[in-house]
Length: 361
Image 1 (tube, rainbow, N blue to C red):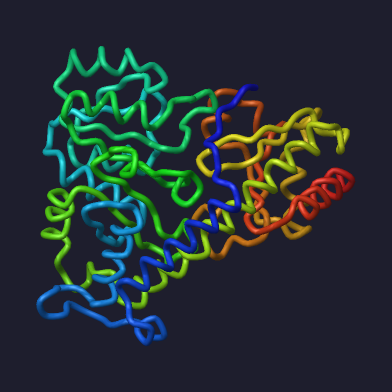
Image 2 (image 1 turned 180 degrees about the vertical axis):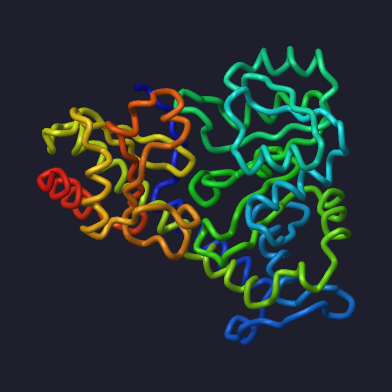
């Protein structure tokens, strides 16, 4: 199977991102403020904690955006707020022809939006669809939705912007892994979960045009909605360490793919890297042993399921069933395929778990 995973930054570029994040932090925070747990509540004049306000300024500066806001509800609610800031009920929203991510599909239904589909792998089809419809905004998912998706984010954003409508990008599974996220490529708003970047549970981020962020902020005013100071500082701590950790993870994926393709474990038919939605390794067995491999792998220390998809809790490798997309394409994949996310593990640990699990069948 030919796949088109996102191109990960190397370790040197990851270090540059870490250093740049620290530089941005030092421009907003005094040293003693970093050594606290932040403040709480709706501070007079800001209507949010000071630490949260400063963190949002750091994020906007880091990604060269006009503004940013941290919201509750993780990446899902970040996308929900972004769509809400640009659209009204019954407006048409341009999306890719591939299946819409389930939580995003729920958001579209909640907001009463009408979906218009174009094949993002075909630039001319995007133009054709936009010319025939009255789309008021577009939502582009950075990570692949199907294994054969190959679209270039910059090209897709550029062609949509020809029609002068706002572009919102779902940058989950791409932030701190790729060179540039949506807002850096010309999108109006970028959305992602901080939990997927070693941050706290339930906190999402929206970056981009101030006029849209202002709308979100206006409707995100209550004390209970605010990201508290300690949570905002935890967002920064996660973002500092995420790029290097994710670059190492990408390196180990390449090592794994190479070893398994070389026939290191005879029971394995093939292995290939995909974005589904995290960047993972799909392992295909010669015999229908996938379910038993997963059962035994957990006994050997592999995580049996995701928590936040590369959250701070997921340091051991994850051995999990093939994604819903793969199962829909090929119902037998659940018996023949598994996906592996190294998380913080090295290739040798994963190979040992695989070999021992197969031997245990």
